[in-house]
View 1: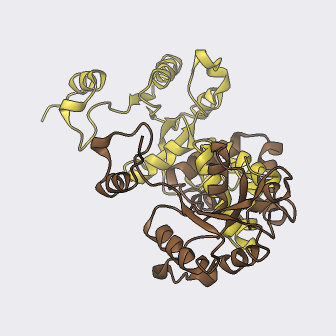
View 2: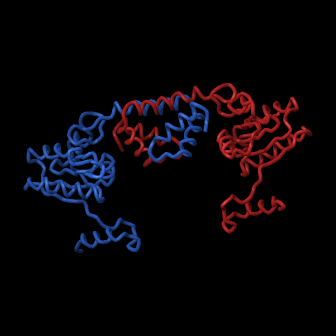
View 3: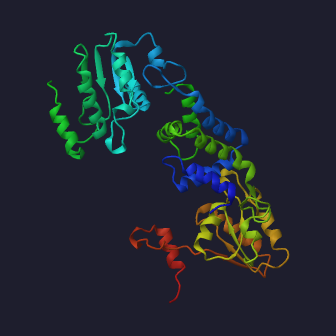
Length: 198
Length: 198
């Protein structure tokens, strides 16, 4: 549509996830209007982040250093590990301020349809973390989806060889502020199954 | 939320128009998963486009060279100039294949509320293009908005000093495939005012 370099920019922006051709065009024209320093800052940030971002060698959360902030902290409860699929999930849980233990980021979920089995996840490293007997509870906080549930089931079977470690799963049920009428039947069914006594 | 460089990347992406914090996070993680060549290509394209993209010295459309493709073309009708606000509008009109004349990109519209008067637009250059008498029609194709209509009115008064140049404005009315019931009253009013005999 556009001449050479502008179309290249639109194509490059359009390759990002969630950016369609119209958004890409809008961002491209916006970039042309910005001053050079601003544009170069964005370009350099994209270029350099990859080499600066590491993964925590213990829990595989994204990290600036060898160990992430949570693993380095002296105030966290080292007897609990919350197992999540992605680093994004760590941020979501941290935002609740409900959990003061450690994390373990699997790097995805088991998904046979995508050819991703347990070997593609950081499962072995999780088992190694249980070696010294310091951990007493593992919270399986994978997503309440087919692949997340499958991953949780797999881990439950695998970790049942550690009798001293309590295994828990995040509650599934109605979202707060949600409407019973609009809840899907699976969620409503889980809310019933997991009902708590008052 | 995230540690150092990753948060910088999310912030940089979030500064782009139409990208919210959630999209920025999604794109940032996506970029971390891509191979380095791909990421560097995107970064370099953003960095370099600015210096490679020029504006046509005649019509101010975005261009790779001194003159844009339309102005360089030998097959275009040089007696007609279509006046638009932005380069994006040129692309939209080219897509219709209805117009074979030349363009003039104003670089915006008159908008007193933003402190943008006619001097901020390429109006003087448009008047200069009429100097040699080759142009017989000017199509005012600014947007059918308050500022676009104001710009068209201003140009109409200004260009009425060229009696040999016919001034036209794009028709306003119901969009094709649209529903009479859902048309706003201004659009429907314009559709009535501009009705054509069969």
